[in-house]
Each structure stands twice: as structure tokens, then as C-alpha cells.
Image (cartoon, rainbow, N blue to C red; front, top):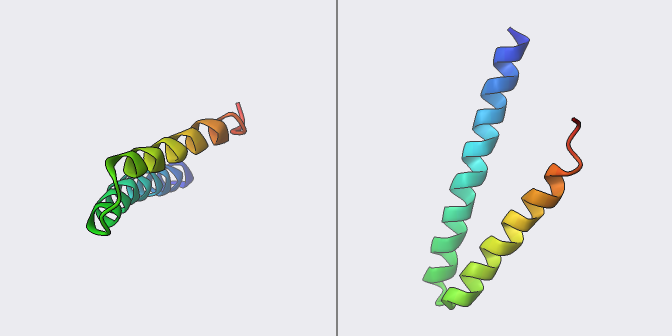
Length: 58
């Protein structure tokens, strides 16, 4: 039961972050940000995920 709870929580977390990146793109586009700014926003986000993954327990 606990494993199922962890799996559901992880899936919800991943979905919310995936949805968040798209929401930020639309928000920036709505506020007339350039494609470069939108791209840099995604770059920083995914770089942060990659660096954070290095700290995850193995």
C-alpha cells in the first residue's frame, strides 16, 4: 500500500511540473516575451532538474 502511495504521489508531482513548464511558456508568450526568453526559461528549468537529480539517493 505504501509503495502505491509513493507511486501516485510521484506521478502527480511529475505531472504538475510538466504542466507548470507549459503554463510558464504560455504566460511568458502572453506577456510578449521573446522566444529566446521562453527558451532560456526552459533551459534553466531542465538544468535545475538535471542538477537536482545528482543529489537523489542511489
